[in-house]
Length: 173
Picture 1: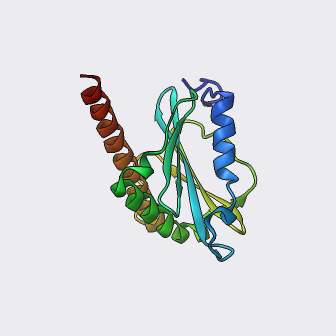
Picture 2: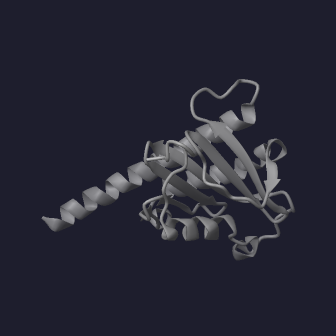
């Protein structure tokens, strides 16, 4: 549960390290000559419940993983599920429209309360935008678009988890 006085989530060392590695993942891995401000990865901190903070990591190649503040994770689904790859790629490919609305940062704080933090990874540095849980104003169409796209990725990840669970149950019989 977020600390009532600070609004901060409790996190494990594993979570902090994994999240930090994702935010600092180098563009060179993708063997593509990205322009300085072209987004190749998106890291989104999403408060899910009073004591659950999820970080979703997506890259231009369609990789998408979830990391939880308690140290848990869901990763590797992009190797099995094409719909997830397409949703993650679509999010990252469209994230560039948010760069002009974001602030370049070298600080990667954990969100407080219900605020979603969006980190856009570019060769020129990391940019941060915030989305408040609830209604996103019509005056911020870039945030609305990115929000819809990352909700699609979350939905695909959930579908992948359900399929994986069904396969495990079937295999156990």
